[in-house]
Amino acid sequence: MAEITNVRLMVGLEIHVELATRTKMFTRSGSPACAEFDDAPANSLLDPVVLGLPGALPVLNKSAIEMAMLVGAALECSIARETKWDRKNYYYPDLPKGYQISQYDMPVCFDGAMEIPDPADPSGEHMRRIGIIRAHLEEDAGKLLHEAPGGGAIDYSIVDYNRAGTPLLEIVTQPDFRTADEVVAFARQLRNVCRFLGVSEGVMQKGHMRFEPNINTIVDTSDGREIRTPIVEIKNLNSFRAVQRAIEYEYAHQPKRWQKDGVEMASGRKTTRGWDDVKGVTVMQREKEEAHDYRYMPDPDLLPLVIDDAWRESVVSRLPELPHARAKRYEHDYGLSAKEASALTDERDLCFYYEACVECVGAQGVQADVAGKQAANVVLQAGAKRANERGVGAWELGISPQQIAGIIKLRLGDEIGSSAADALFEALCESDEEAAAAAQRLNLLQVKDEGQLAAWCQAVIDDPANAKVVEDVRGGKEAAVGRLVGGVMKVSGGKADAKAVKEKLIELLKA
Image 1: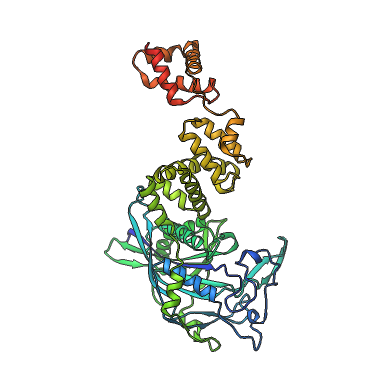
Image 2 (image 1 turned 90 degrees about the vertical axis):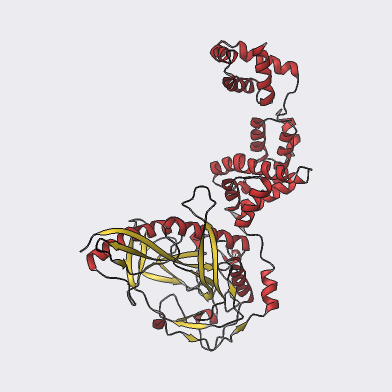
């Protein structure tokens, strides 16, 4: 067999998003994707429609349709003027009706795209455009459990039908991904978009979003051939790490399978594999069904849905400013770096918290660009530091946007130094006190007395431990003065202004 000279990766992605409506897709039974029913006991969110009992008829959930339209608009999709419902027939223990109501040939959204920053470009300026084939609505299946409630071992499987009937938006991309990093970047951005839209909380561990990459490789051989390996679909990945590792595993192993069995891509050769996160391998599950295997048929109990211009426009008008647009605005209006803007928009709650801080700073008469930059500095430095230490989000630390604005006001007025600002932030995480009052109580306000400042500086200059640094500064090495500044800040307990300290030290040493 000819040798492999090059391998290229091709990936398309299917994403299942549980929509956070209060009720299920075709019935008024509570939905587990809604926070209200998050901890519902197993098999408690059921009714005759969910169970497919004789005579039970489905009714459309308008909220789910509008959420799907919102996502479609965010993904630059066309929204169908008319869409219909189909039965996808297959038997599985967690599918109580024996079929799934879905959309086959007339999805609610189609022909869209989403741009993501190219992970291969460190500057974040180059974008990759990923095509969206369709986004269609369907109902979720139940969940098979292989452990007893509480985690006990059982030698059989049990089923929880609570999830059955939950509104599910399936988004299908073009096979435009060329690296696992691109897939993960897309998945992260899509999750963030859905959270900003309020259509899903996107809690991966709860199954709110599940990713199914369709992976194959293009193999170039030494005899000039181009081989396409069969497509492998990895089912139900619920973490970005699993998505990354599963794709990289297939990228490495598909060419090896071809070398062993010579099987190339063709109709009927697509397979489904699972991901074993412990062993770090994909595991064969079954040959993948083709569309005709599901015996799609129009659902006889649901009429086609017509979406008129007025309804479409009323939904699209609710579209908020999306994360990538906010990031660009932060860069332009506040002078933030691409990295800073990305950090502030990667998480919905952090973004909203930051914008509340900017608003509070601006309410104090601070110019918008200064307010945006100062708030970013506090949130991404003092906030991120403590959030990482405590394992929470910066917005959960207990310090309010008004208190952060107070710290910034004191800092801009040279009433506290940088170290005092950090200490004040720490204190306000545990207190509802106003920033100015807390700074006064904690004795953090800067001392502006010239005599006191000179005394602190002279004490550091006279310290024998600093003799070499003093000699260097007097010899013209002014950069060395930084060590003396640190000494003065320590002696003053952080109450001296670092800039004033540096100026005073140089003045005394040059005298």
